[in-house]
Length: 367
Image 1 (tube, rainbow, N blue to C red):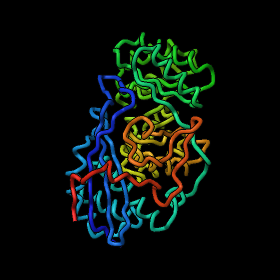
Image 2 (cartoon, rainbow, N blue to C red; image 1 turned 90 degrees about the vertical axis):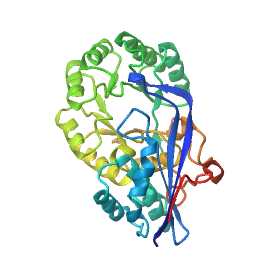
Image 3 (cartoon, helix red, strand yellow; image 1 turned 135 degrees about the vertical axis):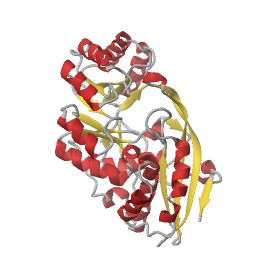
Image 4 (cartoon, rainbow, N blue to C red; image 1 turned 180 degrees about the vertical axis):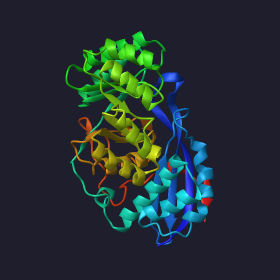
């Protein structure tokens, strides 16, 4: 079997509710990139990556030129067993992990399809029937955030990511966390996430003000050193996200004792292969993990669910149904949340097939 063609689409994903974060970052309509690796055996592997604008060093329109640059590696390659192709891709084009993530996902889809197995079985086997979801709450007025939290709690959600920093004043962030904790009651996990948008001073003032509410903090500042300073000053558990994206940064977070939990996003690391290696390192380091991706629809969601379900439940903090936050759904039959939990698809490979009517004609075809 050889890769005979590469196809790529750009599709707008509309958030069901505008999603506001610190520093003016917003997810309203975001462009996702869908990738197809066609083979001479008639089997197609699907990948997806959806960078959020101004969020990480990645952008949707950067994927296509990276894929075109990698065409000599992809076309004619044996796609079964992703590591060989990805090693060649890394040697040919350094960096650009987000673009390579879509390739890696598609290669794993092909590998599992040829084996006629759900991807989670190829990745090591299912360790849970379903997995806990968190619900991410857009950074708006505190009372509205509390309403969203109550609604999600009524649906069975037990973990809540409270976006902070959009209004630029730390007192309102304190109110946001206070009102959400009141709304969901004691017990559920509540964590405040600045997406790197706070100084250590602001984050410390917020953390000290809510220290009696059983709160975790997430990536308040840009660097791991600053996040460690906040953890030391507040005594609150810390989750890393944007600053943790490879082996070196995971080891730094562990060494600075500020990685109680960590977000492992497929596109930050470069796909399932690299994220799986990061997961295994975190099992050794002792961090709880959220296995997810930056944004996306059903292909990205399926990929992260397959990896998440192969993770020991005691170490999987939560996962994410990205496709539940946006429309259109690329595959109407793909998994959805139920009772605050979700399970991976059961079909061969990723177990999802995008609707050709939604995709339309590809923006790029390489043969």
